[in-house]
Image (tube, rainbow, N blue to C red; front, side):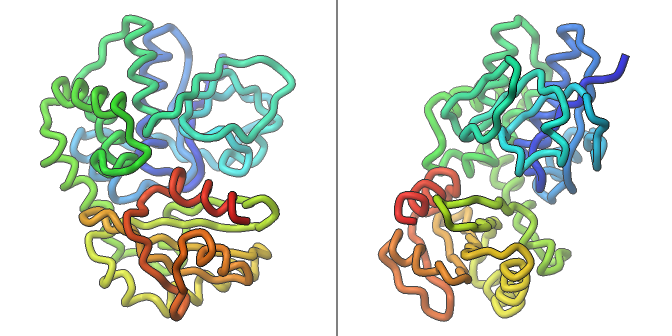
Amino acid sequence: MQKILIFGHKNPDTDSITSSIVLANLEKALGKNVEACRLGNINKETQYVLDYIGIEPPRLLENVEDGTEVMLVDHASNKESIENLDNCTILKIVDHHYVALNTSYPLSYRAEPVGCTQTILYQLYQENGIEIDKKIATLMVSAIISDTLLFKSPTCTPQDIETANQLAKIAGIDCSTYGLEMLKAGTDLSEFSIEEILKLDAKEIVLKEVKSVIAQVNTASIDEVMLQKTGLEAGMQKVIEEKGLELFMLLITDIINSNSQVIVLGKRADLVEKSYGVTLESNTALLKGVVSRKKQVVPILTENA
């Protein structure tokens, strides 16, 4: 029997990778023949988590045969998924984002407005009476810390915090100490090319009719990343031309002070100025208190588009 493949979105983050592993563990416990996979390279933050536990990353999935049975985590969008998703059979989705796909058949769908997919998966473990061991708990709490920026993001809910605290007890870690080290591990961009930095966490989004890419990188020093501003702008302009974009917005998010410096290019760069009441000087501005693309960027830009 062919395995059911479980994977998160392209350009995977810690939640996407760990949710694939965690859901696969749950489904195996329930008797399903599944395999956790990934649709992109492992970033440094996620590698820190995997190394901490001592496990290998999921298999890289470059394509799948038509008719393959799949389960999706941390996304519900064709654009963010495997290329031929429309020709696969989606059995289940567990997500905390907006819904951006249609099917002609029923499926199991679990989505909640929480800060992390793992918060929902924790509920599924509880509902099915499946024990969470130390390694799985570490994967889960790591993702919650990542997605909520150690509970500082406006996407973070009381449910995320309570779940993280419960998982931290099982994992035997202190969220603050472990979480800060994990987040800092993900901010080292020294080994990445400009092209790789711009792809680390980039999402193609249509803001009403404005074709856009909104990318984000986390850092402990905005000034350090801004030293590469000229190169980043050149790379962004190349993507704009290749994809026919009207807007490319790069958020450089300070995980310590919870602000984002943005670099904005494209003929609709004015949309950022209008949305946040700022003036772009040399294509950049500081957005104080803005750390969440999902809650503080996409909805605001869409409203003003």
